[in-house]
Length: 136
Image 1 (tube, rainbow, N blue to C red):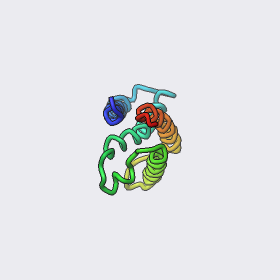
Image 2: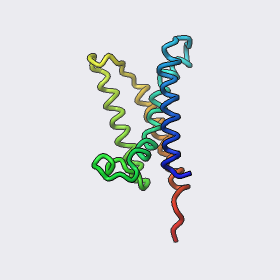
Image 3: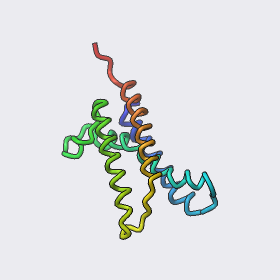
């Protein structure tokens, strides 16, 4: 299986898990304590983990402007995608301070987004290195 197929499966599975948490488990309010906290940060953790996989799945082999920015062909490109993704995550979180959006700002969301993105960097980097064609 190639990286693009793996990326597609990871993104689709991760999206379904996020939807189950956000629309199935959290609205029920049956959880207290640390499980409630985990369900609060889980979408950020999982969503940020999906960033490099989504970028590879959507932009690999494309040549328009956004695809040139988010295309992943090397570890440098992966670092840039993760960095840009983290900056966008932080901007999104700080925009939640504006009352118009009706969302809540939380430093834990930023922290666990960074944790998810860091984990994704290492997992996707390992995946890239294992699927690199052997060159002499």
